[in-house]
Image 1: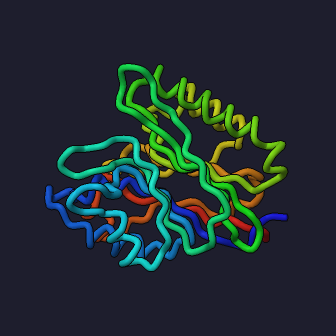
Image 2: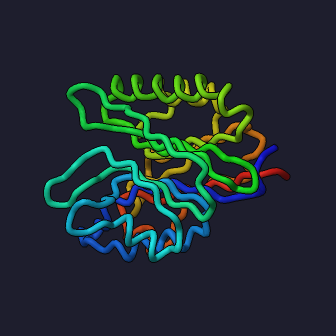
Length: 235
């Protein structure tokens, strides 16, 4: 049975640095509050072990529970990478390693959330090179297909900054075949979006009600990416 209607979002927060070059994490928190989302996947967020945990601040400001999925340790700022914010109880958390040799480490959070019914959410940020993304998509799809028996027929959401600049790129085609394609929404650069780098997929496909980029004035300023929103649930 699918969960009740919920809103999920993906947001590359660019470490809190806005399009004006200023570090203002409070603007990111304001944008997240604007979304009205139940679950938000974040990319490029500092999450602790340094002088400041941006993720902890966002959690406090929004009243949402946070789950860190760091992929890098930066000496001056601590852990950095993916994260998830949720208004619903967390059932389980797994961190997938998507690192490819010689490239910046990447990963994915694989989280099951109690939204009335269990919802599986994978939040990720893929690499910059096409061959790198192909290998990372292989691993993501492997995790999805291998675990379908364990998770049964759970509604599944994959979201994140896919870093695919071309609508016909091979990683996108493979993900579309698994989930079915949703209309691309331009999210980058935030001030004048041209590229649909940020994506949300949902399985079963029929649960998708709407997908849109969030284009408020603060969103155009708070990060170099706009947030992407999807409303999902039964009719």
